[in-house]
Amino acid sequence: MTKFVIRRLIGIIPTLLVIITLSFFIVRVAPGGPFDGEKKLPEVVKRNIEAKYHLNEPLLQQYGRYLWDVCRGDLGPSYKYKDIDVNGLISASLPNSIALGFVAMILAFFFGMSAGMLAAVKQNTWVDYLSTGMAVIGISVPLFVICPVLQLVFAMKLKWLPTSGWYSSGDSWKTIIMPAFALSFSYFANITRLMRSSMLETLRSDYIRTAKAKGMRTSQIIFKHAMKGAMLPVVSYLGPAFAGIITGSVVVEQVFRVPGLGKFFVQSSFNRDYTLIVGVVIVYSVILVVMNFLVDVLYSFLDPRISYK
Image (cartoon, rainbow, N blue to C red; front, side, top):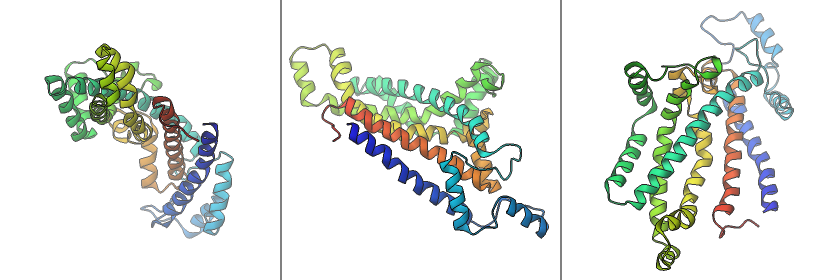
């Protein structure tokens, strides 16, 4: 197990290197630049700005300089936000995106696991149909529909929750409830479907039939034996889902005015802010790679048949 962990940690380095390299060159191949706007800059001014940011150097030299800065933990200056660098922008906004994604993932996991398990145990009953129907709605209805509906019902009609804002900006802690529920809805649906199908397959296994033949209680069979095996597909989904729930919060952050990283990611794409685009991609990639690594490690604890040598 230790050798596997060390091998996977070492394997993260070339993966991130490939991601950084592709991101660096792709954003520069596209037409336009960070200093191109509606009003064209004088040629002398443009050359001076490019010299300041080393954009007048050969592309490979720029890549080597940027790679060295990344290895030192410096993601470079932002070409559009003059008073703060990429490290500052990410460190100020990423905690908000992580907090929102973490709460949304907890809600999706708890309710999705519960709904999927009940749907499997109560197969072909109203419980099963209700859980399946909610999962279909969660997958089908997009976020830009769910968010305004939640605002209309819970903020404007019932007046239970604020329409927008964020707790770190001095607003009430209630501001996290609606965006977290909106963001968790589609992930809840996927977890419900995965858990239901996996639990149904596990309940038909030989060792579950043996446990029933020995006279074990139904609750003991489900929670002690069936649940661990049924969780494997869900756990494998949670790795990329956690990264996706952070990167996919752009719509939610815009609607509920959450000061997260998604806003900068979208704006940097329009502004052609090279360093900010690549910096955000690096952060998202690190989250995805680390979560996939943790999922692989958790596998061996959930299923004793899986061993890493």
